[in-house]
Figure 1 (cartoon, rainbow, N blue to C red):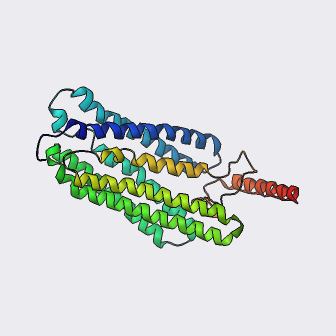
Figure 2 (figure 1 turned 120 degrees about the horizontal axis):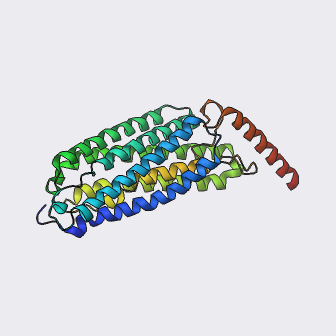
Length: 301
């Protein structure tokens, strides 16, 4: 750093980032409550996986509050607030990848379930493992350097972390888009709806990739401030909200007249050994839905 840091540019982004994180936590609570109450027939390990994500995200929010509490409250008017990284800052990359890595592996499995091709899922898994390695390297480095004056020393591990994260996002978007394009070819009557789903999938992947890129670019090009944390604190929440929203977009067991999952890239073919729904419940739901669709066709005729 060339001069004394500006409090607004050092502590302000921390506050804005945590506020964004808390806002997304509110949305996540609603998504999780809907999922937990509606999809009780999902396999136990899937429900526990969603619960794990929710609990880790809540913990992540708690760490975020602790990060801003220290400079704004505990060290208020003290020079240490502007000299040292907050004590809990190293937890940010670590907890984030404890959330994003299992999610990326889960999505890789769903892409394999939809394509029966191992190449892209393996690439995504390798990127996710590289991401968690880079994140822990980043967290440990932040703990070692401690001061804002040595922020440049965190550049290399943060580049590794964000590069692998962005690559995983891009490959996941490619895989999900491929599944939807294949569904569109198989079901031309649903082409319009599937095209809209492709658009949403690409937009979602672009948003998460942009968040990750902004995080690493601003971190490495703005050594005198912490503007990157405006996006950094909300990154994992973005992943989790999108995943659970996608799970909630499936046809609900309580509404057999809903259309199938044809527009859902992750769960478009939720049958057989790759289904996330318990076998008996899946068979019953499939039969009920078929009956419902048949009655609708009869009424239209």
